[in-house]
Image 1: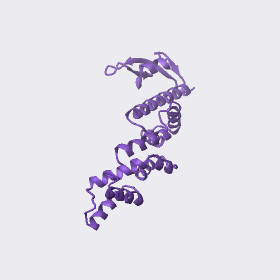
Image 2 (image 1 turned 60 degrees about the vertical axis):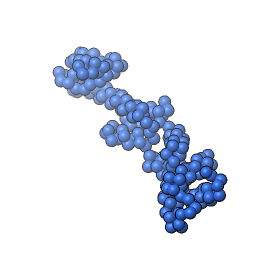
Image 3 (image 1 turned 90 degrees about the horizontal axis):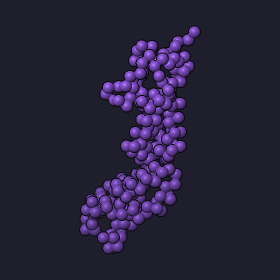
Image 4 (image 1 turned 60 degrees about the horizontal axis):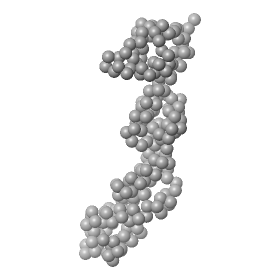
Length: 211
């Protein structure tokens, strides 16, 4: 005969009245939200066999993982890889991670395609970053941008404006010595902007097409 697990008491927690402590066979076993108590019809006197107990614990762990994931996306957008890494770091099992990812995708809490669009727009317009730099950052977040050329066309004007921003920030002007000009150009190139675009912006600036 297998092990039996009897819920001997359910007590609302003093520090958090929205949660309850579950006692199994006379000893504290785990804490859950009061909503979970209702959802799983947990009552004192309930007896579970080993399979039922393991199934209950798995569902509770899944609930916790979903809540953790939702709290995470509430603090900021996440890619699928970032979410997987966070859940794995929290030592959730593989099947729970897969269930959580499926749940998040179903309700569009994570969407790598949308993440790329928002990330591109934000970093180009407000952080003055080049598309190449952003592409590299996205790669570290688990997203490969295959259609970078389409983004180049979309953000061509912003790329030039960002180069102008750095030309002004680094005090580039036509009267500088050649070596000083090259230092500034190199600083801009290290940010991922193409040489041809930088050169064009400098030419336009020196000719007075860009203030």
